[in-house]
Length: 120
Image (cartoon, rainbow, N blue to C red; front, top):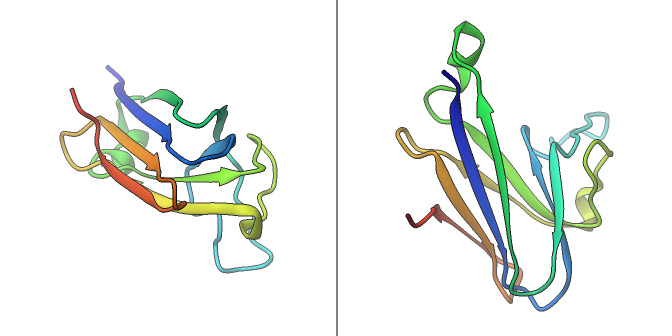
């Protein structure tokens, strides 16, 4: 049975933002490395977005089983496109602790991030 994950992104900034989720850091520290946006959506100030996915059970999923990690960034970002880290706010790492399957990321008015388990 697959494991369901959920990530809520809250735009508490003062501007319309595009949010993207990455499975590897967008800024890999290497000019030749490319990280693609995996999921993306846009939100007005004060809006919430919900991203949901599952990781299949089995041997190939074991590498994700302990603490899946993702990165969230905002800016002019689209899924499947090459990202320019200079045009991003963030990225911020999101680690799902063992036994936690729902996390929340908040873009604050000062463009800092708050990451915490999602409230039930």
